[in-house]
Each structure stands twice: as structure tokens, then as C-alpha cells.
Length: 47
Image 1 (cartoon, rainbow, N blue to C red):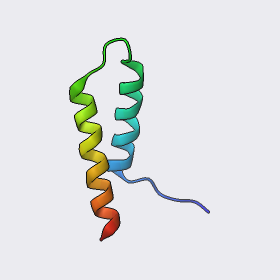
Image 2 (image 1 turned 90 degrees about the vertical axis):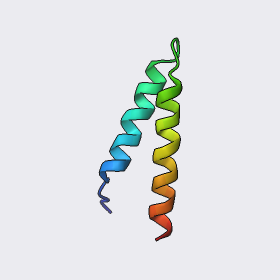
Image 3 (image 1 turned 90 degrees about the horizontal axis):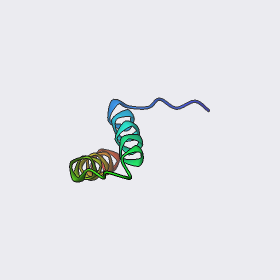
């Protein structure tokens, strides 16, 4: 079974990678962006 990944899902993957790579210098901005994307994805799944 093959599934398509949406642009928001790709954005979340990239943000998580960036956050992981910034462990020594964590960015609150990236963390807030991740939270926002997760919230948006949860809302779109409910529709």
C-alpha cells in the first residue's frame, strides 16, 4: 500500500529534522512551528 505525503507532512518532517539537529542550540521558534503543524494536521484529519 502506497500513501501520498502532503506538503504539511513534509514540512513537519523537515522541522523535526531541523529540531533534532539543533539539540545543542534548541530553537523555540522551530518547536512552536512543529506544534502549529501538528495542530493543523490533527484538525485536517478530523474533517
